[in-house]
Amino acid sequence: MRTVSHAHEPRLAGVAVLRGWVRRWFARRRLARDLPFMTAETLADIGLSRAEALAEVHRPFWRSGAHDAA
Image (tube, rainbow, N blue to C red; front, top):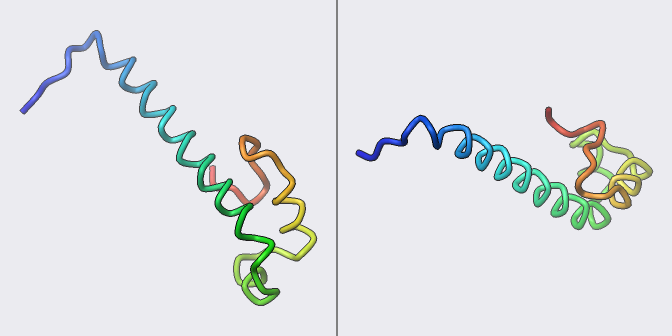
């Protein structure tokens, strides 16, 4: 089993935060790519109107929206 020195822990925590941001950005980008092709029923299932879906498509992926998990 590997151990990490205490000097490296803050840097590793920063890397973990960065990875989390990148994962969320890619998820937002995928969602924005898929939203225009979803049916009205599918949008209703996820709690979006067509207008909200189109606004989400045009929002930059690095900006969180009202429906993003915290």
